[in-house]
Each structure stands twice: as C-alpha cells, then as structure tokens.
Image (tube, rainbow, N blue to C red; front, side, top):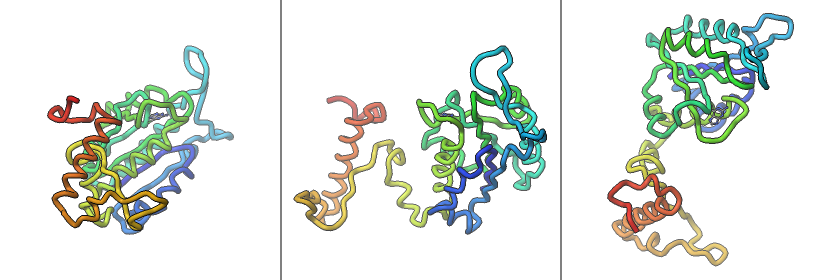
Length: 237
Ligand code: 6GU
C-alpha cells in the first residue's frame, strides 16, 4: 500500500519507523511518503495559515499550499488506481475497526493533516469533486491537529495488510474483531505473583474449559465496560 501524508510537522511520523510498521516499511509492504506542507508555501515565511473570512478566533489553513501539494501527489500517482484522500477531522465519520478493514483494501491513501482551526473548505470541495475524499475522526475529543489521529489510523490499517503481522491468527482473537466483543484477560508465568494467581482453569490443560472461560470473560467485560457493543442475543441481566 502507498501512503502519502501531508503535514506541517513531518517529524511526528518518525514514530512509524519503530516496531512492526517500521519493519513493514523496510520490507516494502508499506510505501510511506511524508510531505512538509511548508514546501508548497513560497513566501519568505512559508505561511500556511491566515485569518478566518468573516472574522473570529484562530487561524485557517490557506488553500494554495494544499492545492499545490495534493496536485503533486495526485500527478505522481503510480499505483494505477485513484487514491482516497482522508482529512482527519473531529467533524468526520468515526474511525472504527470496520473502517480500518475497509481502508486496508485501498491501494493508495493520502492523509491531509490540518492544524489551527482547520483547512479552507474549498480544498475539500475541490478534491471531492475530482476524486474520493473522506473526513475521519478518531473519537469524541479534541486534538490540536490531524497528526496523532493519522498515526493511529496508519497503525490500525497497516497491521491489517498481508504480511505485516507475523501470525495472522493474532489478528482474529482481539477486541473489536470477530464478534465485536472485548478481549479476555491474558496471563503468563509465574503461576503466582505477589499473591495473585493465574486463574486455575488456564493451567488445567482442559482446552474446552479454557475456551468457555475466555468467552465468559469477554462477554462479562463487554457488558460491564461497553454494553452498547454487546450483540442483541447477549443483552439482558
Ligand atoms: Cl481526526 N482531528 C482532530 N484535530 N481532533 C480530533 C480528531 C481528529 N479525532 C478526534 N479528535
């Protein structure tokens, strides 16, 4: 998958060199290209923002650097398919595991990270008219810009790409996958730590009993923490 990121803080994305995603990058599974928006700002101070039309607090990102940068990325399209442009925004559709799975099917994603009070609306309108654009939020809280949200999305999408996670089975048995239940609690050795024991059933060698216990734990935890995620047939009491 090719991923282009546009940001005024390209350094944020150094974090993607670490761990699994970094390995996926060096193995060529993810072709990540980070672009500094200021390189498309040509005045002496490389200005990317200006005061809001109509007045009010804060600053708005100017359309011209965005236009130049996104035109350049679209012109450089070598994947043979039309990219999907994602603008992280608290006003967007909420990012979920389902959306991560959908986006993992794309050949080319472009993330446009806004800062300040947002990007001039005409940028969204321009690229929505020319292609596919989505506004995506990572939850109901406010960040200062799209960078951290983009890193979260790239990690969630990247780990679903074939070959990125070593054991594909580990992708199935986790929260929000399979049946939408949260994960069961995990334990390892020693069997007792600071007086706390590993639940005996996990040491019983009885596979069916272990499976049953884990399922119960998942249902119980979901009921307690995220009741809205419980499938219809598991609701009540
Ligand atoms: Cl995608 N951007 C910003 N700035 N804040 C957010 C967000 C995105 N998702 C939740 N809060």
